[in-house]
Figure 1 (cartoon, rainbow, N blue to C red):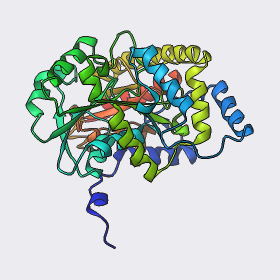
Figure 2 (figure 1 turned 90 degrees about the horizontal axis):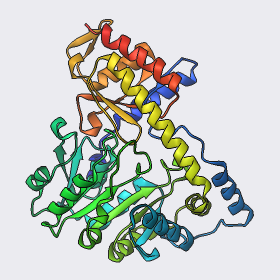
Figure 3 (figure 1 turned 135 degrees about the horizontal axis):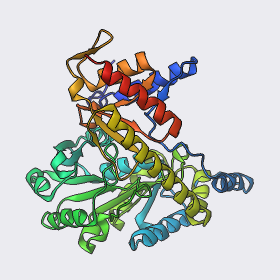
Length: 398
């Protein structure tokens, strides 16, 4: 069998390997604590579920426009104006089959073979793979602790070349949980004003999960920056709708038209029932209460995990958004745990799962070889129990 170079160039996911093994162990009856979740552990609000039932009862089961229903696209326009004072019309919105699909559409619409896309690391592991699938070149910029693991204008300037087509920003970030301040976003935008051919893809999927600080969308910095920015978001994290698969983009009319054309020939429209429910999610006032409660709950869990990680004894990146904590496990390399050698973050994750029934995510695939990621999208009891096991593991490494 001869597979395409494009297919063979996609890297396997260490995250999926650990997560699949953890689920299998838990299904067999073992007491597995998992810190691997990349989704809220909340149920989708009942008013959204009821809207989906209503869509079925009304027979809303046929094709919609490829870029999404007018009603949902208008609701997204209203959301972006309410949150950021960003003005878009419905022709500048493309609704897709999840945030990942939105990113794929944007990269396919903008990137030609050989063109470069700057990706700050640590990064969500899908970013470089999507660039490679478009025959683009991922350019990885290693973020530094002295800059709080955020991209600086000076770093950006050093990595921009004549081949640079786009920059990907994730704010708040998966996996670090860091959030850019308003002034930091302004500084990046000011630098990008000097590079007129560079587009910006801003992944704002965690924009409702920010704790104790303020940020801004880079598209708000100027009309010129807005014209070159694709704002990417989804219903997944905000409304606990990961399985509903609705994502969306806001961009210039030209980019939106290109993305809509690509989508029309690859998937047609997103799920009609999920679109109907998403429109209600964005427009019903009950969503405000749900979001406030979820944010409060995650903030409390964040504080608990940060506190308990101090007992584990490993350096962490303290998050101000999303629902992840990254721990530096480099000090464990070269040691053993109950006779098993530890030489990588993947080894840490494997041994903890095999011997302590605790799942953490190794970050080699996130461009952070010395780290593991822990999600606090789980109960406080599991956080306490799982981190006690993590402390036992660290203290048991010799």
